[in-house]
Image 1: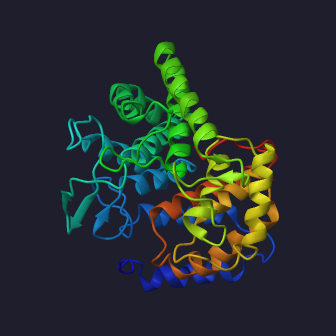
Image 2: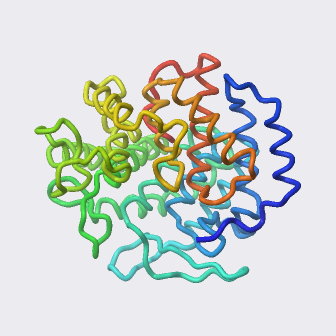
Length: 364
């Protein structure tokens, strides 16, 4: 994949100047949110019809949902978050190649033309993260966001139905009907998506729907406990039937261990969360300054923030500021990393102001 083509020399120069005076100790959370949001809504990462790009020639709605969750953290970007929700709902499959309703395909991009690729990386995570986006947006209290969500509650219910339709008897969802793997990462996102759907429909005064999705969320949590926890090694399997976790592998083995706390399946105070986070830092002591993967994996810092590990989070944010923010967000930076970065900086900013001392349960 190629580098984003529209960053611009002037923009890069401005970022370098802005960061020349930044403190070496405490990241500039507000500035990070603003600069990252500006990048997402710029032509480097968004199209006029509301689409948020993965690469200049592809839209991956899962990644776009994560980017849009980040955009909800600053009111100036709410119009783009609504535009993305509008794009997603306009492109819902009313019946897809798997026989499901309200799934989403990836799209190819050539100029202004967008073409369905009639496939997706998953059906479960796409739907789950869109529901979490809707709940994140509702929680902002933005009148336009709430009006839009109310007007499209039927479509949101249909999206939630994707998760229920692919949930199996053990409580877990398949990645998609023709890829019948029950991944840990996906199912933590599904748990959060269903719980966020329950919260949203409760806010919409639809208790039956709220209870329905809450029950299915608990089914996912039970499925994770009973099918994905490896009691012999005190960590999680990466998928049902997987071999024992190999902590020398960054992805998926090590990163997957942080997803249950990242998406609220277990609390940061849970002994399992404490053990897994300690093991992660033991196995990857330099993750805050040296990337173990071509991608920066900002989500890992999200888990660290939930664990209230401010020192490591701040060190990681400083690394991102130097590596990506000050250089204009060049590839392999992409929209989902940007969304997580906005979320993490927002969480740290709130905690710095005394608004978030208790653990946050999810990235919504």
